[in-house]
Amino acid sequence: MDSILDGLITEQPNDKTNAIDQLNSAEIMALINEEDRLVPGVITGLIPQIAAAADRIVEAFRSGGRLFYVGAGTSGRIGILDASECPPTYGTDPSMVQGLIAGGFKAVKDPVEGAEDSEELGAADLEAAGVTAGDVVIGIAASGRTPYVLGAMKRGGELGAAVFGICNNHGTPMAQTGFPVIEAVVGPEVVMGSTRMKSGTAQKLILNMLTTTAMIRIGKVYRNLMVDLNPSNKKLVHRAKRIIALATEASAAEIEEAYRESEGQVKTAIVMLLAGVSAAEARSRLSASGGFVHSAGDRG
Image (cartoon, rainbow, N blue to C red; front, top):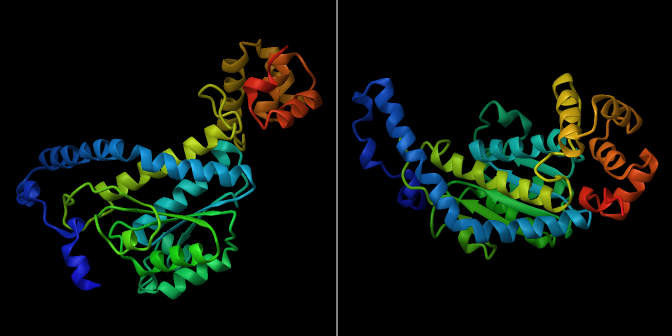
């Protein structure tokens, strides 16, 4: 594995930053920013592959399946971050999108030595999570050779799940697993091997696209409003009522009444106001429309 690691583009020195240790703060940041601007261009060329993965996630969600991210270190933390933001943003059950990291939850904050080096541990963690044929597994590893991630991907395939990979190098062991792999190759890092930088940024952009696209396509967004958010604090209650206002142009009094009668369910309140129906009827309409406000809120 070491010979593979030495040849990875993410492990090469970046000629453009060879003298970065002699620069002042603004000059260092200018170089970092210049490198960061390369990332969106790489992602643009990968959209067809990312869209194919998103389509499969949508299919899984519509059938009651789940999405599992698997990674180690930065990649694992990025997967957990994306997963943890889905419930407050889209009102999803926490089990719907999950992140697994080598070393367990402790590794979110503190490195767990050697955890990423075991294919068996990756396979065991995935199996312990209860992955089935109805789920999607996405392995994330900048190097494309992390044993923990490869073990989880292989076990996911054995369990019948749809499996994809995300890495930041070409021609890696991940690409040789037989699963579709999104290779977001953004070049050497500003600091050699520090894949929390451009590689991590690319991974975050891809995960944002995957879950945002999937949530839109299963009806959790109306226009560009997050109508399934969970108003779990004062800020989110305020945002929820503002979303209702933007969606319906109703008066403040009407919004307060609909919010109360809907028990804080933003989507229900919107349909109540758009269609002029009760909370019960709004819920019935949403159920019949598969959760899409456009159809449920039609007065006709």
